[in-house]
Length: 359
Image (tube, rainbow, N blue to C red):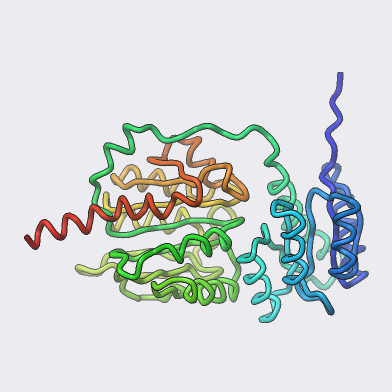
């Protein structure tokens, strides 16, 4: 007996009739997706959500009247868990509004096509948006109960940590906005982050996070020395690495080929911190689509470092952390609200060791 799988029902919200039609045609061309309806403004979108009960909403960032962020805020009051993908231009205002929306609970974003022909624009939408819709709506299955073994956590408890490396993608801006305010002003090691985002977006994200934490958050810059209290985010379209220069570790940027279809890539950053810091690396893999970070986590573990992964229940998409867990590369699996306490517990050994030396 064959089982009919219900398609993912999407509500398209955009003030442009051309975009609504184009999006609708692309999404309806996939047998796993169906357009539940469309709305040309935020007020109508809220009514259509209540009527249609869609599985996911694509939401234009820049709309007259009730804009994308205002609409998102109201959607979150109606349903905190409904996946919402912001549909954004790469303009300054569009990028700024998108980063704000992601920090306010949007699930992900897709960039509006820049191609001159309708055919190329549709292809761009298909390649970028459809995988995100499917990933965001794939979380209805059973949750994994995999956790790191107690013995692994105990055996690495006294490891000295000299750098914290974080990798994330889908759901990352919101996760980082939750985590960063929890770090104390005297956090004793540098933090390096890869968040999958295009140019301009990463600079805006670093500025927003800088306002949320006592630490100094900046976009990565070539040749900058890593020091405690600093947070460096890889700039869009550049891999960010860490290299030894005498007694110091410095940042480097390059535009070598993408890895895992990503530039910046988590694997590239993780491999470099493992080479530069050896066993004194603590790596954290947060929510994200795909498997970027798995090979890099293997390198961190081979060098003697430790890896923490976000758990499935608190992840927007459990692709990246789930891949690391499936590969048995984690020392601890944590819900989002326990990640910073776990980091501080592990990093505190460094402070205790330093105090013992002074005594």
